[in-house]
Image 1 (cartoon, protein in one colour):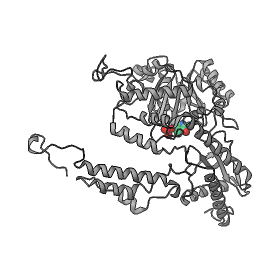
Image 2 (cartoon, rainbow, N blue to C red):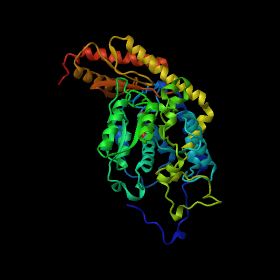
Image 3 (tube, rainbow, N blue to C red):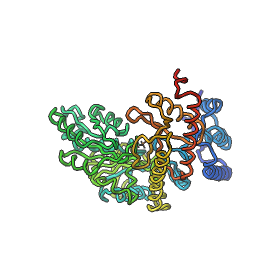
Length: 503
Ligand SMILES: *Cc1c(COP(=O)(O)O)cnc(C)c1O
């Protein structure tokens, strides 16, 4: 299938590169792409929040490996026809599923500039690395970490949690866990967080070899905050059993309901037992940018490590997350490996104050720092803070509307930006309500009017609205409510509450 090349006799064929053969043509195409993309972003509100990929289009996206070049214009036309119209929808003003940001037009340009420069952010004697050091310093200041703390930009919250918990393992194992592996210890290392912890914490402890069973899931109270008595009891029980408690994990904004654990009290308990205190603040930590919300996060500044995203609340394009570690030395000690081919120098290209590869699991790394830098410079903290506050106010607005309507039921307190509710025309069967609301969610998504996702709260199926969307307006939530009630009423008319649709 593959063509024979003249590896042994290269002089027989002209040399080539992947640069365009026709610069003016690519430049024209690039300008058109930019114009098209701006028009697309400007017209988002006129589009459906989501639409399924038609079968014919899906079939077109399954093609043979291209062996020969296709004109760039044609490739772009295929993108426009088969890919661009059928996205996940998270940049739409009425997308509130899971927890997703939508990016911004300016940071789209930042991504282009970063890709154009295409530096490798493994080490740091370059202006691009100084940009990452700069944004890390800003983020530390915003989230209550000292300027000398360790930090690194990563792909997202999951890797940020993994990175932080790897440091916790180094710090608390009591032996050289990197050298010896976990088998050395003999005692099970245990970690503690609430039942509302994000699944990425489980994945992190599994990947780190600590085992899912080592993750003690402490019950929550009616506000979905960790129960402190339960936490102390679990630690005491483990100590009595010969386990070795390692870390307490606090949630700053749980994924289900946006609950914030009492971080100050968690820090106290961690200190009392000499444990690492990690905070998963994927989106919630960013609420610290809003002065009115800071009291809810009191204690965040006492975290040994903090994981958060920049592609949720400060609305940056995927991917961007961050790990901060109070003790830079232990952070570095967790990851540093310097083979001969990665020696740093006093001068020259391999000099510089820091090698980012010493602080995480990646060696080659992209320039995601640029979009963070451009966003903070262009928007300023005050505007980002106002937008986060606006999202929280929208969640309150939505909760109020839900509470005012007899056919809607709020299923959990909404302290931050997540509202869990259901349509309930006055039925008592929990099973019927769950089925009804599941169907309602699917019809809402398929209508293209808005996207919510779902969760289960104490056996109750909840429509879940997570607002990390700078494009949403209050009228969008009015539309959501109208649409939910309309679809709910339709389902009642179609017999979904009577059991007619049970089969
Ligand atoms: C989204 C989220 C994560 C995972 O972050 P990713 O960026 O999706 O990897 C972790 N914790 C919480 C609370 C989250 O909301």
